[in-house]
Amino acid sequence: MPTAIRSKGFIVLALLPALLLFLLFVIVPVFWSAYYGFFNWKGLGEAKFIGFGNYNEILHDPIFWRALRNNLIIVVSSIIGQIPIALILALLLLKNSFFSRIIRSAVFMPMVLSTVVVGLIWGYIYNPQFGLANKVLEIIGLESWTRAWLSDPKVNMFAISIPINWSNIGPYMVIFIAALQNISPEINDAAKIDGANGWKKLIQVTLPMIWGTVVVTLVLCISGSLKAFDHVIVMTGGGPAQSTELLATYMYNNTFDVYRYGYGSAVSTMIMIISALLIAINFVLTRRKES
Image (cartoon, rainbow, N blue to C red; front, side, top):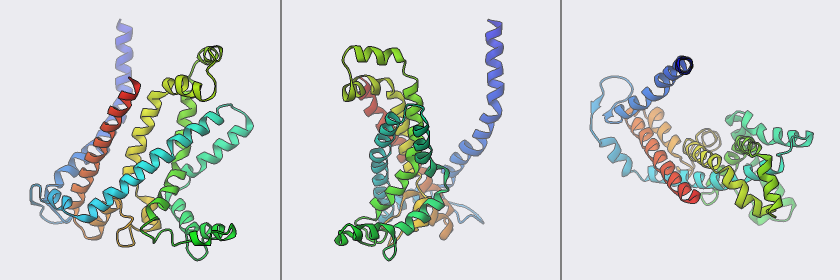
């Protein structure tokens, strides 16, 4: 018993520096930002308390709702485009062969690249004059499909979601590979004996065994999508006419372009609230799935 107590004490002491840094640089700024959301403050000078004035203005600003709609498009496209593809790749590349390692590295490579570099690359791909996307469509005889991908409000959010998904498939693939490798070989052997193969094995055996990992990846996907910022800033800056505005770019523009730090703090608090609501909905739905 004393050994167990000493062991727990050592663990607490070892984690304490990281916990203090996390509290200092993450938790405290969150509450500090929420506090300034109740003030009219330009970053310098006196902060004037206005209660829920910033939040009331946010809820009556059509650009905020447009940004929220665009962010939900990113969230849905990320859940559909990242997690299933990452799971399929993990299943295909589960064996630790030389070929699998090469493909894993190639899939993970976009995550290593700077998001600014990724945004620049895809900005050139979507360029209406010399971009690769339109050139390929012209070569295969689909000239009618060519367009200004980042300027057309009908497609620009879907065009932006592609590089975001492309950049984030790799980490989820690695997470799924780790989860699949933790499934006992005895379970797979028992499934084969019972005649569970292919899709039947995936649905009835594999997914239930890694469902906790799927839930975690969904949470990461939702929270990451609501923080999407770099790709949009580099590729469109939120334009044209705020058609690609996201919550993060909306917060950035109001905070640093027009120096409304109090308003920007209120927007950041709203982003946290929306993220918490979506994650809570995710937990409710996935808990029903488990049952």
